[in-house]
Amino acid sequence: MNSTIASILLMVAILGASAVITHLFARVMYLTCPRCQTLNARRRAQCRNCGWELCRALSANNTK
Ligand SMILES: [Zn+2]
Image (cartoon, rainbow, N blue to C red; front, side, top):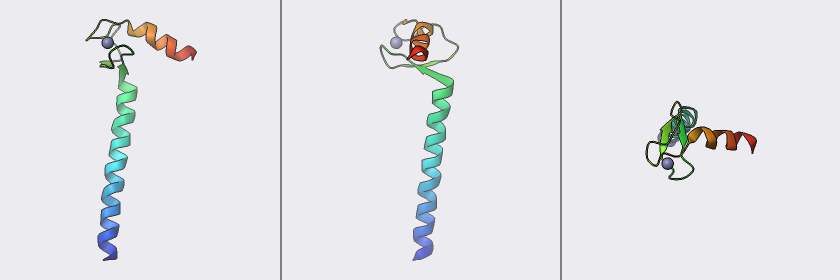
């Protein structure tokens, strides 16, 4: 019984850790458009969906 609980906890911990890692990876690699919430690759100057200038949005975030 204890080993079952332990294996369930381990599975939840692994799933949670991978979710956090995925989230951090997305934060590092992508920019979220402030206008339409589309994820854009960090190298992009403009949003691929609405054309919003992401460089401007990034500098606005840095001054905050
Ligand atoms: Zn956009």
